[in-house]
Length: 409
Image 1 (cartoon, helix red, strand yellow):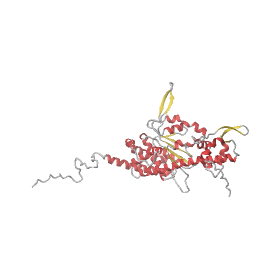
Image 2 (cartoon, helix red, strand yellow):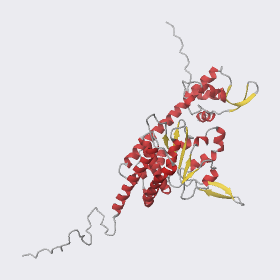
Image 3 (cartoon, rainbow, N blue to C red):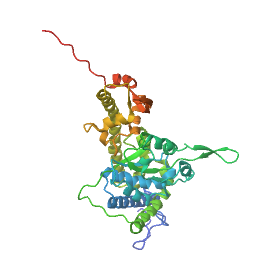
Image 4 (cartoon, one colour):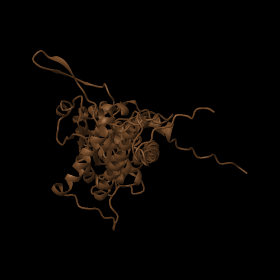
C-alpha cells in the first residue's frame, strides 16, 4: 500500500500561509502592505472621487453651458497639478457673448483649485515670463478681451499673445537680452493658462484652447453665491487632494499615450485632460472622450462658420460700397456704420459693440485686404478701404451672376 501523501499542517482559523502562494495572473500578496495593483486601484478610486467632488463644487457656483463643459473644466483643473508631465499645456478659453455670463465666477472657482495660481491682471509680458519656472504656475487672465480688443491695444500686447502661443508646447523659450553685458538669456514659456473674456480670443489662442462658451443664466437657474472667506477652504481642500492623488502618478502620466477621439492640435490640447481621466478611472475616461469629441467638433464647426462669415462679409462690403454710389474708397468708420446698422446681418451682434475695426481687419486679412490711410472729402485723412482691393476677392469668392440673356420665341 502506498504511503499517504504528507498532510498539510493545520492552521488556526484566519491565519495566512507562509510564504503566500503565487497564483498565475495575480500579484503576490505583500504582507507588509498593499500590492501595486491594490495601490493603483486605490489611487483610481481616490481620483474618481476627487474629480466628482470638484465637478460638484464647480456646478454649485456656476451654471455651465453643458455637461461636457463641466467635465472639461474639471479635468483641466486637475491637469494643472501634473503640468511637468505633459508635452502640451492646453489653454482654457472661457468666453461669452456679453457681460454677466459667469466667466469671472468660473475663473474665481478655478483660481482656488488649480496648481500654484498666478493672476496676471495688469502684468507685463516680461513679468509673466520671468514668473514661469521649470515647475510652472497656472496663469489666470480675466477680461482677456481688453488685451486683444482694438488694433492699438492688440499691438501693444502682441508680446503677451506670443507668450501664450509659445507656452502651449514644451521647449519654446523666449529670448531676452539682459545684464550689463547684454547677454542673451532663455526664459521658459511653458505653462497652462486660463483666459476669460467677452467674444472670441485671437484665433491662435483659441486653436490652442479647450473652449468653454458661457451664457447667461435662464430665469430659474440658481447657483450659490461665492464668498471668498466662506467658500475657498473647501476648494483649497480639493486642491490638496488633487496634489496628493496626482503627485505619485507623475511618472505614469508621462508614459501615457491615451487613445484620442480627435487628431492633430485638438489631440495635443485634449491629451492631458484625457490622461487625467484615464488615471482616475470609473466613468471619467468615457466622460472625457465624449467631451473631447463633442466640444472639438463644435469648435471645428465654428471655424467653418468663421470661414463662411468671411465670404458673407465680402458680399456685405460690396453692398455697402454700392449703397454709397461705389466710391473709390470708404472710411473704415463709415463702412462699419453701414455694416452694424443692418439688422439682417450678423455684424451688429458680432461682439458686444458690433463689428469693430480690428474684427473687420482680422476677417479681411486672409483675403489680403487691409486698410490704409486715405484722403477723403474735405481733405480729411483717415484709415479706409479701397474698392479695387476687393475686386479679386469678390471675383473669386462671391461673384455677381451676370443676368441671363433674353431669348426670343
